[in-house]
Image 1 (cartoon, rainbow, N blue to C red):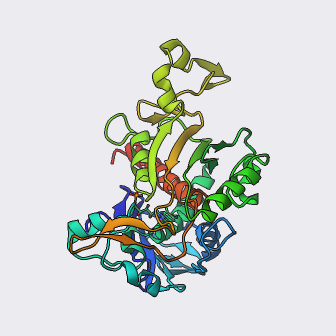
Image 2: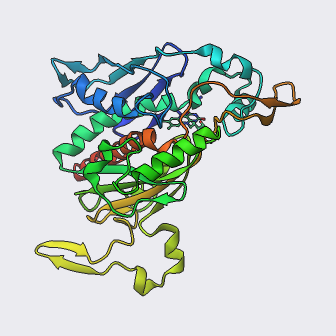
Length: 357
Ligand SMILES: Cc1cc2nc3c(=O)[nH]c(=O)nc-3n(C[C@H](O)[C@H](O)[C@H](O)COP(=O)(O)O)c2cc1C
């Protein structure tokens, strides 16, 4: 399995399975003398962990991070930083009855077909728990961005057909679905509770806004900033689509409607509108970077479903375990983390260009 690393200069490698000893990440490329505290990393892991509210899975994992290497007296040394979270709330027996079959909507069939062996306990590497390593690395990437005042806000824009109309970024961490519209939160919670009561699940949309990103990050060809963000986002299990700025709606616009006209704001080049979503020709243009993600409904639902087993027989499966009826609330920190990792990597590439590396 040779696809566990992401990034060019700020490079992460995640490891571990959901029901193994633990999950973690090795991060290379962190500059020396960056203050790194376990509490900074723990904060974001707590935002991702299960059991946060009635609308997330009731699994209770402490998800406590341990710094294994690369930090001396509270500062990065320039050596690889290894972070580990030990698994604690493993009910492997939940997965015994699905051992020999392929759960609909999961990576079971494709993993078994590709490797001929599959860790059936909780999805193995395809588990949502793999994103612990990403969130831990993202917390460190965010510290580098903070020094440059670059800010990332990700939030639940929609759950099913309930869409946020107003945007109060200060509200995101004050509600269980991590939305931005105080008027809509009750309807979103009720929607999730309704589908849960039907033994079903629901999808949604996560929107991300990056503010104060300098112009020029990214590359005109294969390292386009939008291409790398799309790669990062589509590497998160359960993401089904991404659009920047107007996205698919741009296909219904004319050029005169869609072009963002430039103007001078003092010494700064700005645009009057932001239909492009802050990226032109693969490089940031200094406006807010805006993208939206289509999040699918959770695959694990407590309903009898048709499937096949390893022996090639048509059967039915009943999925046990404890799952999120909607992935959006816990996916928000993962999206923030992957955004931070892409941006830091792009910042470092920009520095490398300056020094002719
Ligand atoms: C933070 C997070 C938590 C997740 N939790 C679950 C879950 O409880 N149940 C589930 O069926 N899928 C969950 N998923 C989604 C699965 O990992 C994903 O659907 C599966 O690996 C198949 O990949 P695909 O949907 O991209 O095709 C989660 C994903 C993330 C990022």
